[in-house]
Image 1 (cartoon, rainbow, N blue to C red):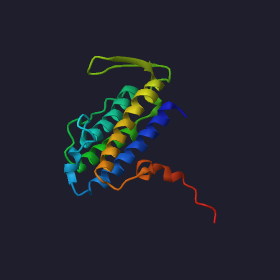
Image 2: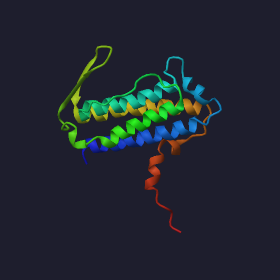
Image 3: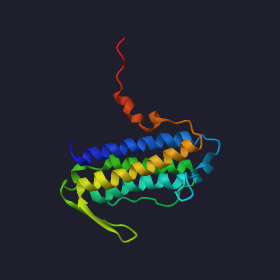
Image 4: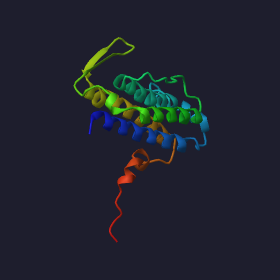
Length: 170
């Protein structure tokens, strides 16, 4: 399996988790006001963690898939908006051909807004940069929701694993 195929499957799983969490969060007593909550004063609020999770996937698709995807990076103000954006990113993943990604050893170079420039092989970018960024923001969103009393647990975070569950022998 190529790194591209593995990454696309991983991103699809992550967005499935995020969609599940957002769906549960939308029923919370605070409603859309929950989007303004944060774990710590110096951390971004839930709405931004959701947006950053999506943005990191789209950025990886752009850098590795050489696609020019349009992405709304404005603030998320409602759970309905978050779910609509997720649906769009899921469509991007589904439409991405892993064969369009650079060879594993090809160089990916990028500059952050603060001026720091990185260069690494494509598979390193995917493994060491893009995927950890996506998981970081997903985990921050999960932690905010737990801290706000949402009844979620590990099964909500890795729900995609249930497709591999074997029934115990009778």
